[in-house]
Length: 414
Image (cartoon, rainbow, N blue to C red; front, side, top):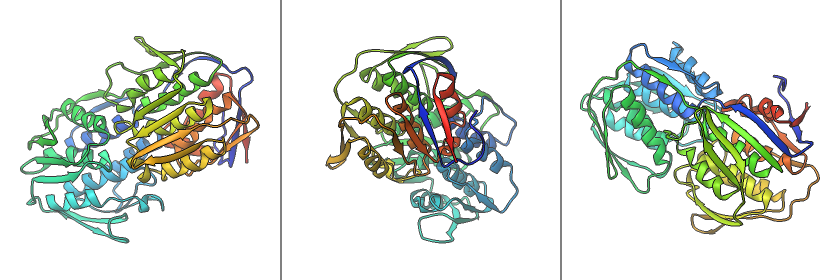
């Protein structure tokens, strides 16, 4: 087991390059966090099963029960955005803050929309960024909103979930290209599971005023977490991996990893328990649009740099405002493996791989869980050092232990 103390880095190696095993993935924090907010909005007791062990979900559970005036969302984007809407529309008086990085992540689009609906929200620092003071809700605002849809779908999901509680419901017109559409559809599907009907026609979503109902809901395993195992299979000399708890018909946009990795060397077989992953032939030059699944981009970049596949990518706009500027972080880290990531035309990025030198590789994580897990699979090619490995607690706390189950040797560096 990896110790709980804070480590400066871990060094990963694999003696054989062959992996085989059955992995119980963490539950989806995207599903879990939406279900927690909706259950709280219902005001009734709902049974939620298989809630994610991810720090973001555990944090949201604690904060929803907290009577404190100051609420610290830490580094959790969904927690910050969902609670902003939740506290605003339920009329709670709270101060909402987070880590230094969280207070650099914009929230103006969501706050302006909530103000139009009748929320009294004041910035306590820089305009457009946390921390914020929530000063109640009048309920006499405008029910029809226009919201930019090309920044973060979490703004839209936050508004949709509180929509049924508004006196006249909510009509949301999405302006521009809709990013991460599957996450919006996940939100609407979960709302329907808890008794709320809505319509999504063209770029307009209409949610009538209506009550949520208590319900039982079991959270699916996390397809984002699965993506790192797909990368491991693609990089391994031999692989036979079963991932438990995934569904062929999923709410999660990151299920797109099935089709993406089919081109990058991994075949998926759906079973009653989940999915079975085996190796297949890879394509050499590929292109992908990550508009609906931006969290998969880091996995694909690290993998393609490792196995020498050139890839062109679009739909990366939202990566600038994540836990770190993920585009910049990737551009820096792939340099250490003789690869480059460049914007060749506006909005189009190309990963050009170089020759991988198989001495020890080292990667920084930028306080971003996905940077750690995206680059760790390269340890099947060469020894890999991952700095600040504790960041995985945000979404996949058992990641390092699960790697040990399939034969990785991990040395802790204090």
